[in-house]
Image (cartoon, rainbow, N blue to C red; front, side):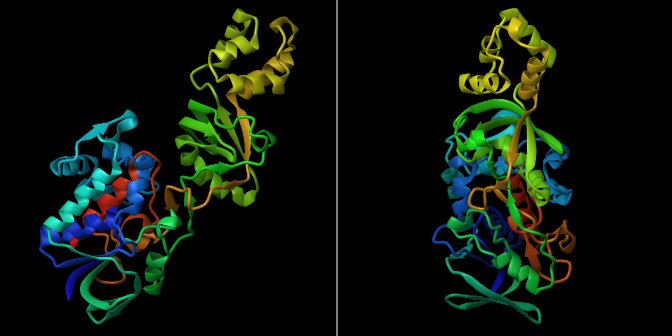
Amino acid sequence: MYDVIVIGGGPSGIMAAITAAKFNNRKVLLIEKNKELGRKLLVSGGGRCNITNLKSISNFMLYVNDRFPYKTLNNFGPNEIFQYFEDLGVELKEEEDNKVFPISNQARDILNALIKDLQKFGVDVHHEEVIQVDKVKYDFHITTDKTTYNSKYVVVATGGLTYPQLGSTETGYQIAKKYNHVVTELYPNNTPLISDDEFIKNKTLQGISLKDVTIKYKTSYRGPMIFTHFGISGPTVLNISKNVYFGLKNGPVILKIDLLPDVKREELLDKIKELSSVSLALKELLPKRLVEFIVNKTNTTQNISEISKDRMNKLLEMVKNFEISINSLKGYENAIVTGGGVSLTDIDPKTMESKSVYNLYFVGEVLDLDGKTGGYNLTIALSTGYTAGYSI
């Protein structure tokens, strides 16, 4: 008989298990179906693990889809997460936009620190697959592919549907539905975008990387992007993918990209006039292949004196509002986080406990809670896991 059983060995589940054992002296079992804990954590941030983001909580909330985690972030937010790992001996560094990584650039260092803490506080870890969760009076019976366990508390930390190749399942959503929780529409979020435009199919711009653009569709995001063989990717693209997902319900979505957000049309035109050449002016600002594509599309290869006002306006428009038609999104295997999940209205934000089932908790990606790229989702996972473990 355990006091607490945590289902799912990702960052939210590990943190819930550690905290329940550490602060409340509970006998805790962590069940993970994979042979190794934290498999998704190891691939996060390209294997570097963007563990948190040091923005103030009020600013942090601007990058999350709901105000729900405000209380959990005050319990265990970016600064506490930073200090926690430093105390465990993981040296951290802050990079651009307040992103935090281990100095080693190795996600393994983060995972090893968490595993060390699990061991320190006596958490049992079993690698089994949970088949069923039943509540009988005041206790839960958790049936796995090997045996049945009993516990007073259950924390569902099963994650979402991202990275199915690493073992993602719908177990958490099935548990939620069994106990009459609403599970909102699920979809791949923070994912690359697919285009059938001719220049994408022909791979004309494949591999061209831009450090600073603004992508516009209903809202706008600024940062890096890259043209790929299937469409576009990069942090800015991932951040706007949620809006695109819902827009695609009404057909293809047209994105407009400002290729030079710091350069006004008038400034660009002045530079072109100064050099008497569109190509010469743009090649100082954009990659050569992209410039060649733009000048060919707008027929502005000639000396400036031979370019009509109409064609010049088309050129300026293409630079400041480069259009790409999006037909679909990459799936869960490429998404950073799952959109949708267990409805936040069913969960107490102070404790992460279900409002309808006593002693049942939901944390991390299984919730209808997601942030943009930049350490926000891992922070949410650790923060909600901590809050549940502390509250039990």
